[in-house]
Length: 408
Ligand code: ADP
Ligand code: ASP
Ligand code: MG
Image (cartoon, rainbow, N blue to C red; front, side, top):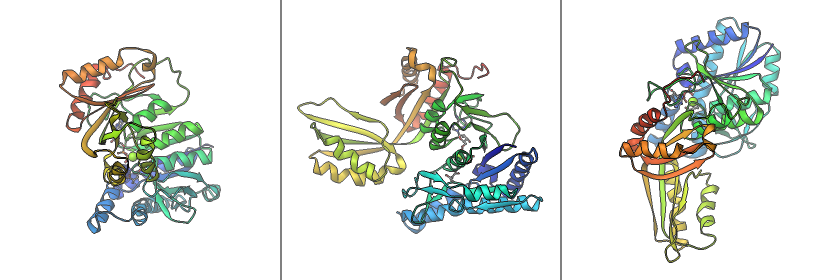
């Protein structure tokens, strides 16, 4: 008997019929002799609607209240799913994040799971029940409800799988797996049979929202295989696991894009020790993630410092940076919210020259200006104008011949 964790995304539970369809799939897994824990996302666009509702009440919703509000989306879907299973004759119970023992830090809207105290889940499984856990939420030491960031139900699923020692974590969504690029934008994109954690993490962190980046980190840390597949078909999906030899795929595996990019430039910064700390420490304290950082070579000990943040963090970041700009004697700071990121990813790139040149020339041929460039061992990212991201995606998918399948 295996223990399997399955997660169903918002589009998979978007209405009553779809919830019933998911219930049948869960039952099929259980009837194969498995114990099943299910993580449910909020129905359809519920989370977006709740955010919009809060914004209609106030421009800056209180963070604690907003997290409680957003957690109700998953309360609806998980309870309905438990009801559907029971009506089909299978014993099931829904648990909120708190009841399931999902303990987090207190960073509202982007909380990190600290532990999963799974005794309640284990007890219910022991009684033969299918356990439905409300995704995306947890509870702090002070019993306040938190949410894990958009797409965070994936992380609930992998963290739960890790704490239960599950055999596999299956993520069911509206596409049949992880593709060489977003299949909704690139019809020629090819489904990948398998991916390493490292490759998937870079894809997810740089915009391929099919998995929440933190879920991939946890998968790697606890060596939990993650299957991404469709909740509507029986197609085999993509397996993310640790057993892939690095040398096998010496090519670009996928392209990620991200439209949620903003840039802040602090102008006329005195080039002296302590300046970077003065700017980035207060941003870290506010839990604002910084991505690319570029400091120009200084002229007469004055320089410009540019960095990127998620567009959704821009207002908050500017409120932090503006007073610091004054206190360090910089000339001022400016923001640009109309940027995007395009990244090529693949483990084989690290020892093979020519990938960057090919990427830049494909962008140049489209007349796309590169604002900033960053790299990791297995990724090259260009920050470009948001309006050109789709053109860049099409051009790069072609330039790296990703539509040509080789079965991997
Ligand atoms: P869910 O609601 O099931 O969590 P998401 O919308 O969060 O689903 O993630 C699935 C979506 O991710 C797909 O519909 C697709 O548009 C997008 N996506 C982006 N990049 C990729 C990729 N490389 N492979 C597959 N899907 C991708
Ligand atoms: N419902 C949340 C969201 O829309 C979490 C998730 O779906 O993973 O972001
Ligand atoms: Mg998702």
